[in-house]
Image 1: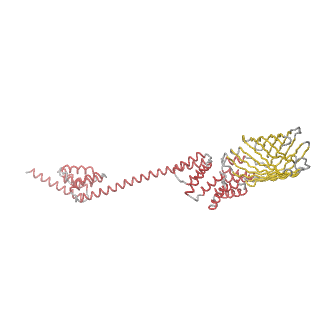
Image 2 (image 1 turned 90 degrees about the vertical axis):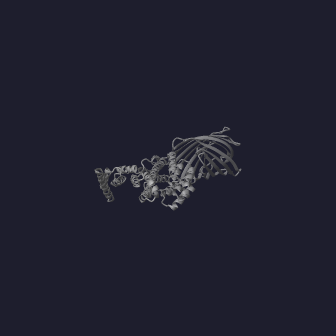
Length: 573
């Protein structure tokens, strides 16, 4: 009986503690609830309701491990206890184990589809799972963006390095390495206009003009108004001997951008190449007014002044360029150049051995020339000749003028006082024109020339008309000359003939020549049919002194034959 009373008292105490604990939990006093419910569980350790409430109180107090243990014990005692499963699902949810939470909750939703707490928790789990997926996707997206940004930063750094190296190598003249850098940079940035312009310039400097032309046209396909591309094409045209095309492109750029310094620099180069040094000087000065430290413009200004024979002004420009760029080898080399000589003295001597027992002829000539300007030279000559015991002293004045870099002409007037066998007087004119600048290193320029001469002898006047053509080869180290010689005299009328000659620059300072002709020759006022062979050499001792020697053989129709030996010397100062 006593035992039953004691058991009832414990049951009442457990019920009281349980009720108080549940009340405390509902009021949010989780610590009190845990204390009360643990006391109740100590009295009734297998009471599933007490253990459920204890687990929920521990969960509210933040002791998830103890709460999980208490609720697991409930499921051992009552596997279908829904509140225990919901509590365990909440613990898994709090720990972020969403799959575990959904798995734990599934039996409750299966057996009690309308359970409000289970449905609410399931919705929370689904929402959390969506948020988790969104966070993962956002994290992945941010990671992809971070990696892409790193790749772009590396690409930009590599592109900047290659561009800088390519430009530096191009400026230093290492065009092969420069082209390789530009090509690699374009792989990183296809269609980059600045890179394409740099590549075109490097290709042009390397001599691959067709590749440069294609590259600049690619730029114009992307940007038809690109001044850099049009100026690049102008440079190619200039390099390939098409100054008119180059000038048209430069003028088009300047029409859009009158202050484009690169266009002005090219225009100045074109003017200088055409012998318009005053115009070039003005343009270079215009560039320097905007950019006083432009070394290329200073070098060009010096070149223009030097061609105008303003040596002091030229050296001043070169010295300024050297101050702004102490490493400029071009400025140093120009300053080291000696002024171009303006005077030239030519001295020649001839001895002719004649057949049929005739005494030899002796001739000596002296010519003094002076360059009045870069395009005009005046000269005076005196020649003393001895033939058959008679002496003639002849004098001549001549003016040579360069109208353009491709067109030159001359006039002359001479006479012989008391002439015995030389013309009493003679007048002449002629010139040459470069018809083609050359196709490549094999086939060089083509030059046309003509000489007109009238000479008055004791026997009458004789006219000579000699058109000719010269073709150069092998980088102008070999040239062939042909002339059609026509002589008109009162007795015979026209007498025609020809001359061919080959010149070879064997080494830089030695040139040899040889030729033959079948043409009329004038001697003592008579026109004689003559077949000639000749040859010789010209040796440059230095830039200002040249020696020459020649030998020739003339077979004259119905007259003596002649063997001619000649030596000569030219001195420029």
